[in-house]
Each structure stands twice: as structure tokens, then as C-alpha cells.
Image (cartoon, rainbow, N blue to C red; front, side):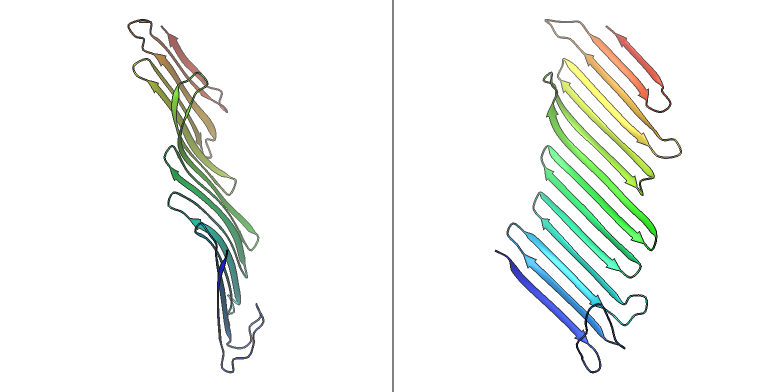
Length: 212
């Protein structure tokens, strides 16, 4: 079931009817609509016309769910010299936390964009090692990029594993990776081992150490 609410405001000296998005003399027109759906979902639409020379019209709509732990927001808008859209999703569930955002904007002939991804969660390696994963990535205008992620697993007091990846922005664009895997040993198997590796994708740096 969906509930609907509509609001219309129209002002002018003689109050004639105005067709969107045209505006005559000093007339102003505003219309909004809200659709309410189950599970906290809302859809909002807005249209307006004004006598302003630089802002004769505007319109936009959004679809969103603001839940206690998860949700999303979709939106788009249009102005005379600008238009854009956005997509935002998030989850604050224990062990599965993430925020994802994508946005695009066209200002006259200039295209702008942003792409953001943040996450934190837990999983298990194929060899049974429980891990914690965290990271972020950001891309601005498909030109400037930066990001990092890490994976950490430990079985006390037997084994430790760490993987870190980092992407640096221009002018030093490269991917840096640090890998560490070691075993501490126990009373039944006192042998200790450690392997560490550092590498880069573009500059091809390789360095590591391995021992027991």
C-alpha cells in the first residue's frame, strides 16, 4: 500500500494557470509530491518555476529508505545549466558495514563525478583463518584516485596474517602491497616461520624476507 501527499503553490498578481516550466511576468509555481511505501520507503518529487532569469525552473526527485541499520538514497535534479544524479547505499550491520556513493554532475559542458566505497567486515580464509577486512576507495572525475584496504587474521597464539594494499593519486599513481604471514608455534609444534613481501605494480619494486 502506498500513501500519497501532493502540495501545489502558485502565486501571481492575477493567479492565472502556469504550465511547467514556463513562467510569465512575476509568477511563481511550486509543486511537490510524497509517496509513502511500506518499510520506511519514501519517494519525493519537486517541480518549481520562478521569475528569476538565472533560475527559471528546477526539478528533482528522490527515492530513499532510512532504516535503523541499512538504507539507500537515489536522487536526480535538473537546473537550467546543471543536472546530476546520485546513488548512496549503506549498511551498519555488525560484520558487514559499508558505505557506497556514486554521483555525477554536468555543469554546462563540464562533467564531474565522484565514486566512494568504504567497507568493514569479517570472513574466513579457505584454510580456515578468520579475517577482518577494511578499506576505502575514492575516484574523483575519473582522474584523481586514492584508496587502501587491509586484511588481518590471527589465531592466538599460532598464526598471524596481514595484507595491505594502497593506491596513491597522481602524480605518483601506483599500487603498493604489503604481505605478512607468520606462525608462532605451540607446544606440539614449536617451529616458527615468517614471510614478508612488499611490491608495487607500476614501478615494479620487489622486496621480501622469508625465514624459519
